[in-house]
Image (cartoon, rainbow, N blue to C red):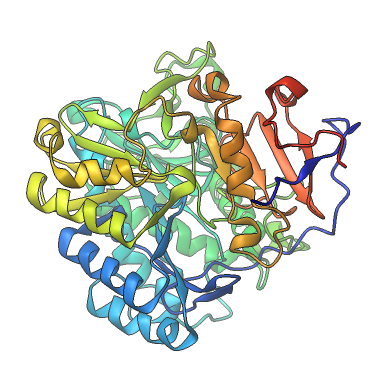
Length: 516
């Protein structure tokens, strides 16, 4: 057995990593545009709202086994990657996915399908809003946008993200998105808060939209279309974010549907002096003074330089690279009171009352047999669907007790699936490393698993450890990892606020801390 790579000694945990220059993150694989990797070609399946029918899952399991290696990844955008395809199979796969209702008919339309939502929110008693209908309406609208860019309408940049957050157990509070819709209000006063460029707590509000999902979807897509029109050509995601920020600062009142509201800052009210963040205007948006009328967005955005994967300040933005992995499987939910006393750990693994059964996978890795077992459980015990989540979990909607004694669940556990919410593997994040990527120099997942025992208390309490095979930092969690190991030339640089926990006594015995 090959020993794990060494940890370099004498490295300051706050010291910047001095490896090869950062790789340029450019694009994501899709059904129409597979990507070559060290273990063959991979293609990405993007189910609408993360939902697969049992029949679709059985079909995908067969395709993965027959045309590929059988290996799969759950990604942090609730997609499913099929790995180990030969070039011919990868090229032919797109037509089959379109026929199965799992991909758009054109490559451009498929690339625009960037909506992230957790469909089990619709069954969650703690959720603030159902999300599947809104996510589906947004997906339909994105498919319908023009395929051919024009001077007055640019292509949606790679890695753009739209989040639909229903709150509750499956909340997307920590995911940074270019455009997001979060629930606000209750009952007949419920609305969708449309905001841009951030998490639920940091995004800039654009408007409060009516609760009607189709109206909200059209309004959100109109804002996106305005930003795509205003952003400079070839400015990428940084240009989109700048255009969205400008719109948030000065959204035309006439662009909003009746029943919408504007942020306080846009109608001349000091939000700090008001209990409500927005002023509700019955019957529609209130006009603003001449000083607040729409400005020339092109002029505001002139001189913008494109810096892929970063905001204007150069800091990473959005969910980042999507090569498998995801956010912490014990979801972090924002405190309703606004308290900063710490996150609440909300399990999405195991029996979920009134929802179904959650099954997790270390690093989001599963195979065709596991997917077939999940489909069997969905067909025999659930409502016939599988919900893919961004935290490397699959939720099977239904009565939790119905799944308990099924042989397929035992088979999943025996194969290494995660069925307990305190499993320390849920806190481990690792890319494929040298076994699946030409840039990887270490066996990242084996090295990460070697830390599960020594750091079990830290991981089970919600700590995150990210092991990366190179400086691209693929598969990093949405929330910052407490410990990050970055490989270069077969050795790791250790960083992060909790790096001190990797003392000699906690490292696996096979690890040479002296870097020999």
